[in-house]
Length: 157
Image (cartoon, rainbow, N blue to C red):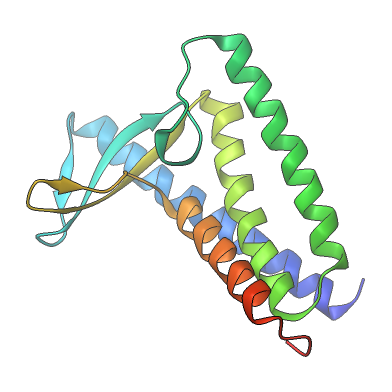
């Protein structure tokens, strides 16, 4: 195993474990304090919600067979991303690593809880962004990095 692959494995594991740690902390606090909301700033708070849909709670389903199909599809996409990661280089590998690490965190929750705990709430006055988690942050940053790299086509990166 090359040093690059070891670094990528550690990077993905770090993202997964960091995501798990934050979710466990929020779950433990929410278990002790019902309807827990922690105001960090006037625009950021932590408040647990359960997401049974996909990104940012979109496509939530009551139908378990549809949920299971979606979870299976997500696992297949994760496997595809893993194979792309192996073949990629440079910053592209970092981008796919962020997407993979975050995706593994969320699919783990889908398999464990049949839902994903989201808790980071950005808001301003009456405007609320979607509530999300650390895995979502890494997925989003990875996708933004990959889009940036695709737009500017830096071959030596």
